[in-house]
Image: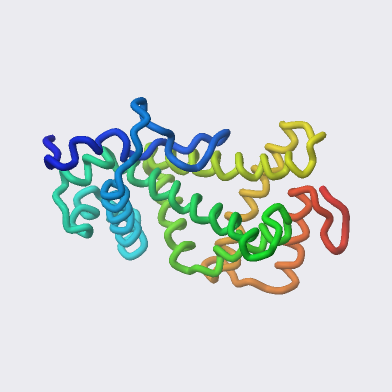
Length: 233
């Protein structure tokens, strides 16, 4: 596969690296430490936009490399230059979604709310459930993972990173907590959040104030913060 001439210098630095649960969400730097070019960022973003459109509108069964290339209006080789396989494309898309959620949490400080306030963080994360397109996208991703081992690997990496960030949040608030206990709390937190997306979005159920109150109390307990009717878990 021969890339376009002006892409030669963008090869390694613009391909996405898997999220390290113990590290930052951003892709790791390449061996030569060269920074990704703005053009490379734009091209990758456009390809991910196309993948998100195909996944959300046509479903996971139609998320093929050819379909994404067609949706982006590029040659298949161009897509494969940035994302060699569908699993790479899916991993990058999930990484972008996680990065966007973390950016919304970080924005709490700029808005005057404490970014380390569990209640504010929880409200921000639960707000993702109000985006029907995002919830539908994840239902398609889960369906893909049930039948495709590579897709399942990308999904596991995404949730490992998600739980890793939650575990660090828990440990920061409770420094004396055993790391295994913090990780277990984080994983249960993620499980409840993802299941709640289905039941609060209208797909498997609808949000209800009384149920949401119990959900919030439980999630805050996992983060180490007592809810309005009880102590921390």
